[in-house]
Image 1: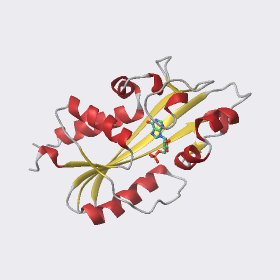
Image 2 (image 1 turned 90 degrees about the horizontal axis):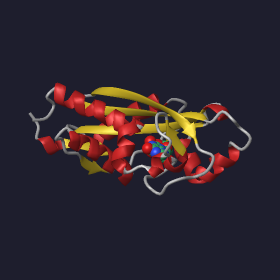
Image 3 (image 1 turned 90 degrees about the vertical axis):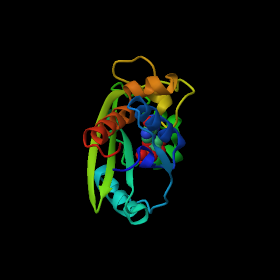
Image 4 (image 1 turned 60 degrees about the vertical axis):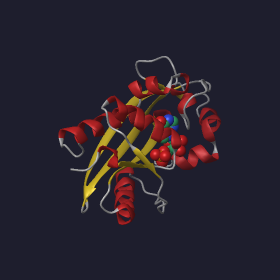
Length: 193
Ligand code: IMP
């Protein structure tokens, strides 16, 4: 058995780490933050990207129990854009650019799709997929979180992610649901004590 604090979340994003840690703490699990630089591949499918990342990172973290996550925002009225290009699009045009592209578009439905890969060992891993439906707001709202949080309203709420506390966002969000599932899996398989 490994020690409880032997689970690593590989990400360069502090917000993602804080959200994931909060979910894990609900299960009495702790998470370590590690940032490993791997070459980013551009691919039409998030699942290919995450498997590539998992494989590359396993060469560096070898026997460690680690998690990688990859997410995209898919907007129906923009034919799924930015989707797999979410990271690049956020850096280049941001929330304001998305709102501009959506001017005159009435169908505001969108979803976040997230993949998480839990690397076990020797190229054995488990992939988790979560989709959260919602809407794109008409203006940026809220100050919390990161990325597209000010313009995404998850179904079941009238607040954007950025208007929610971290813990409330976790109750609704793709990452919250993803890490809930990963935590349950880790406990059910007794991967840590
Ligand atoms: P990544 O490649 O998984 O980091 O995600 C791609 C882009 O989606 C990031 O640059 C973020 O801008 C955005 N993103 C991912 N997760 C979230 C989230 O929980 N809220 C808002 N934006 C997010």
